[in-house]
Image: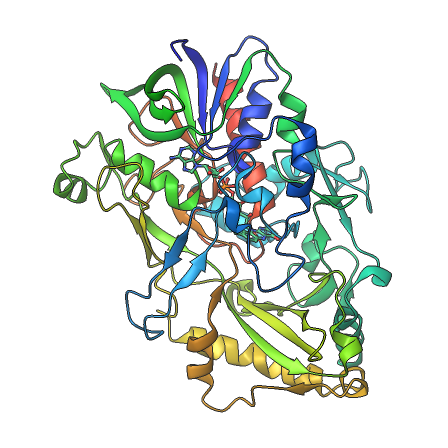
Amino acid sequence: MNAHFDTIVIGAGSGGGVAASRLSEDPGRSILLLEAGVDFPHEADMLPLVAVSSEHTWRVSGAPEFDWGFFDFDRAGRRNGRPIRLPRGRLVGGTSMVNSTIAVRPAASDLDRWASLGNAGWDYLSLLPLFRRIETDRDFGDSALHGGEGPIVINRYRRESWAPVNGVFADACDEAGLIWSDDLNNPDSDAGVVGAMPHNRFKEAKQGTLNTYLRIARGRKNLTIQGGALVDRILISGGRIKGVRWAGPEGSVETTADRIVLAAGVYNTPAVLMRSGIGEAARLADLGVKTHADLPVGRGLTDHPGCPFFFSADSGNALTGRLFATILRDAAREEGKPWWQLHPFPADEEEGLSGFFVFLCSQQASGTVAIRDADPRSLPIVDHDYLADPSDIARFRDAFEMIRRLVAQPAFRRVNARLLHDGADFESYVKATLASAHHQNGGCRMSPDPKLGVVGPDLEVHGVDGLYVADSSVFPDNIVHNTNLTCYVIGEKVADHIRRRS
Ligand SMILES: Cc1cc2nc3c(=O)[nH]c(=O)nc-3n(C[C@H](O)[C@H](O)[C@H](O)COP(=O)(O)OP(=O)(O)OC[C@H]3O[C@@H](n4cnc5c(N)ncnc54)[C@H](O)[C@@H]3O)c2cc1C
């Protein structure tokens, strides 16, 4: 590919799919979207894909046939070396096409904290127009809080379609005196409520970027979507980007551009930057990579650690239906942050087995992403440093006590619910069952200070002109809720910045 492009977007996932689509609205710009995974240019081929979801069985997370194959290998030895799978989508649409479609916004307090860290323009009120712009909320429509014309259709499932365990759960929460919220995306519902999860699904189709933003943009002459394009590195000279080296169907290619938006996701974005000479100088020198910008790339990785608690009950309770239909958000604690969220799920109809999944709303940000060598085919080494903070066990215990309280309510007693874990040797239980809630972020954090972050509030990499990052790696710290909608908004935000500047 010899042409020169206005913008190359690397990675067609939640952030990159939105950025490429929005930038291509300007016919004066030529956009190349490079994606390592497969593309689905024909609508007919997409059909099975949009229904693929970890929503249909709690056992499968992501879609293994479109997965990068990441694991956390317990470097610190806190789980007896038990690996934890970390699914990430490898296809046009990225992880937005393999996720569970829970469409929740970050808490207002999360965004206000991001702004207070020096990231001007990232506070709740400044970002609200973008959260409205991305959505068509079929329950609330065009209103002060919601959008009615965006590409992503959002709705909440009616009680009739929930897996029965969700109805039992909602009744038990009511009996326990917990507050029901009709809209978990209202900032008054960020903590201390139970409600129906909003989903980005429409007529059973997952609303990822492949079949929303990129479906809209695909016909534009100024947008080229190149699947099967593994990006090796960004070419930099004199503190400015020149282009991208990538491997496609015809071998290794170098393509030039005026600017680059890197959106390869929470693990691969740090890896591409490091291969390109952007990272901690000492580490890059060890790998024989010339440093262009000495920045804390790969630091501050975080996630929501999760843990399942199973119970047996009369089998009707475990019947399948909408798995992720309801959720309880812990009350705000110190600094206004809840500790955990928990939701029920059916596990095994024949055995009458169901469960509660608990995830912690924050994690100590001591995780890292590193590269083992400069070969783009080598997967980066991911270390989430799960359970580094001793308070994690206490927070899981607190959620478990809430589960006990709920199971003691009449709604659960009516179905003869009995928890399989009795709370003894709790720490060992958590270590043996710990999982990821898949809300990974950080690694290229946003901060105006290049000692603390990799990109500034405009998402441009410190010290490298023309290079932007637009995915979950830029979160300055963890948000308490799920991450996907925030990634869509980051894609919108980078497109706004670029349009304003040139
Ligand atoms: C199983 C699962 C369930 C989830 N459920 C939910 C949920 O219900 N609600 C929610 O809010 N969040 C959920 N999430 C999280 C959410 O989907 C992610 O936070 C979000 O999609 C991340 O977007 P991103 O833009 O950072 O990266 P991605 O969407 O992962 O995009 C990165 C893209 O870059 C491509 N790429 C990577 N490296 C290269 C390279 N070298 N060259 C070219 N291309 C490359 C990848 O193939 C991918 O397409 C879930 C995640 C998982 C895994």
